[in-house]
Length: 89
Image 1 (tube, helix red, strand yellow):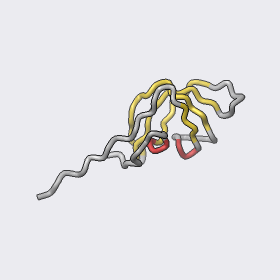
Image 2: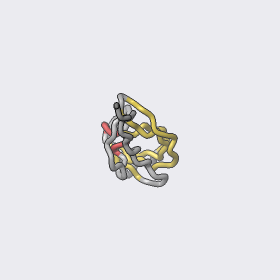
Image 3: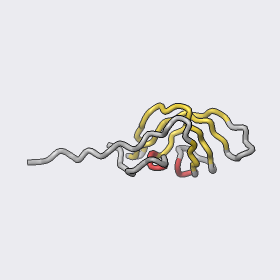
Image 4: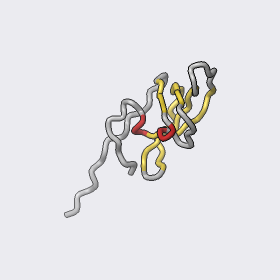
């Protein structure tokens, strides 16, 4: 008898108001270090067989930067509360 594949826990969702300190490899189409304060979580999406969070955030490149609202795709394992670097299924 074949058992069904084990269900892995979903990655932790970013919290509205949380500040994420992202490196280039932490967000899709990343160019440089970015500080993003989450304003809305759109959902979890798959890219390259890995989970990514689609979020809207207030983003700054430096403390002196006034910032701008942007939509980002953030690697799920880059979210601080992420307990499981899971493969998206």
